[in-house]
Length: 100
Picture 1 (cartoon, rainbow, N blue to C red):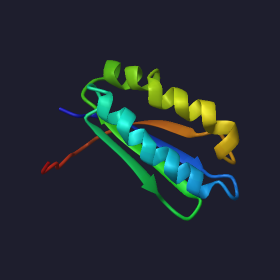
Picture 2 (cartoon, rainbow, N blue to C red):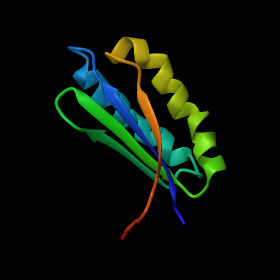
Picture 3 (cartoon, rainbow, N blue to C red):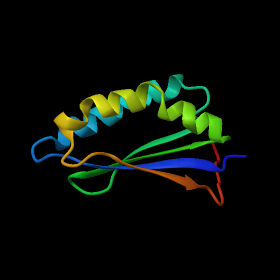
Picture 4 (tube, rainbow, N blue to C red):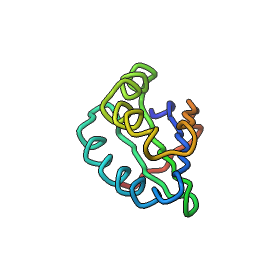
């Protein structure tokens, strides 16, 4: 059962909004290659605020994701794209409906 998740809030630097959206769209390809990441969303919360929500079946899978290519790419681009460092929150999934 999927109980472990992450929510990452991202605030684009002024003028970098489209670059952040493009970066997140490209992240889908990396997420599709992660066998231990069954759920991954890239979100636009407002014109300059973005988010990533992903969920996992175990804590080791969540930790592996935090050490993986998406997290590495995110941190490598942080200074260029984001007004503040990414805010990464470990959260618990209380319920899930997935129709596939």
